[in-house]
Image: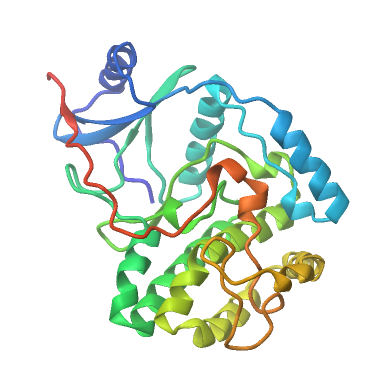
Length: 302
């Protein structure tokens, strides 16, 4: 559940902070300390063209893969409006997302999901770090990601970019969700959105399962998790995997992702990664080192 507004912090104060900082902020996203809490300001970026989306749409049509239909992120004020709307919708459903504190056409202010001044790690970073601890540690974290997807889907919702980098571990252990500049449900049926979420998540985490030796057990967990999904989602997933059968002939590499050596069925048990084809400019690569330390949030005058 999204944390409540801090007592004694009136909404107009957030609005004033947003207006003041938008005029000076250079980065698209920056963090500030305001009245003992940490907030993030996200400003509108440049607008994106539709050329690559049309090309990818044609590819999805040719391959008859509905889940590969592109979900446009047009950037600019439209992306801000989409993210603000989606954060409020998901928060109203009791899902852990940043609380929107103030919003304008050109930017919005949201609350930090962790403790003020403390970094909130992504699930991708935590799983990557856990590889050295062995398969049990990796599998436990990986299952938390599947549970997080299930909570979203059970409420009739979907994520935008369901990579492990966009799932964050809050201080109380709850998995939160970030990055909602596009809305797959505006383009795809809900079942396709859920398949897309699942494919993005397994694509961004399968390499850790393989490196840690957890892949074999994860196959069983994956099969059990699928039984909690809707019949339409499972049907569409099976169809998508069948259409991606040719990907089993791709060479194993960090860029293309691992096959499932545990069960010998690379495209039946594990979906081959298609995210790099659906979003060529936002490839979800596994981090090879710990993320750089973030700059401390700026202190604002009271």
